[in-house]
Length: 382
Image 1 (tube, rainbow, N blue to C red):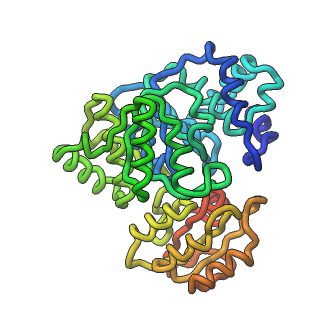
Image 2 (image 1 turned 135 degrees about the vertical axis):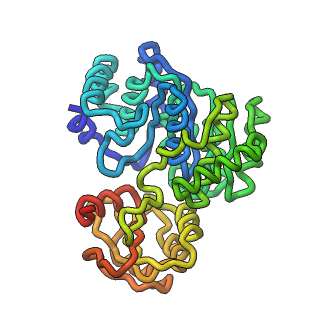
């Protein structure tokens, strides 16, 4: 079974063999019929941008896959096709076929994400379009081995520095080197991202555009209508603009209604009247949330991986946080509670152990997919 097979693979590596995925893919590429691929790279907003775009393409009558990661509760969340997560039956059938295509040595060697990526492309081979979200990387990401017709670049910021680089120039270069033919640059926090993108585009004769070149007054009216219908925060509106620009770049007409079922769960999702949940886990996500919820106060249900800048994240969120409730997450990458507590107190925030939801308090569940999963499985019964 797929679940048992994947459970044998580690989710994270201290070192990554960047030659493995291209080498193994080359052996089976003739068996995979690739559709038109739209690649998503960046630090934040890949999931929602991709879901906006994929949903609109489906609404236009096209056969579409959306590959995203990680998942919150069920593995099936990663492989979405024509409006729904694929079934366990589809996954098992594709798993058996992929094992027939791969040697046992290669199947075992592939990482969790690499194997899942090939599995998704097998399922998507009859699609018209695949919206393919990169994992943590850019040019060396498992998703970068496939040819694509367009790359969408969401905001690039600090994250996964151990693999991507220690500064924005290095991180942006690593991510932007994944562009193969054309790219649309979304709103960026760091000015040098656009500069680096222009340099790479010029060196490699790539087409680079900004969404401002495509959007007009008619699009602005539709964006307002969609944003009001879905109650989109400003940063989600930027993701929507990027998706709409992709449609216009591809010369695909759209109406506002094509997006009405598109919002991805886990992105500032309201679970109940007093609980918001967001799977953001870096400083850029924290800044977006703080801006969206400005003027409000929440009990922050939180925890962090050791490699995240949780001290800065807590400082950014401090204006909207009344206190921090540290939730237990059973994963070896999670930081020691005393360190997170010390960082919260340094940010001027009271920090205690999370016990339960109180009806008279407002909560923001924020951290990572692991935090969201733990909260939903163990504490939330809505």
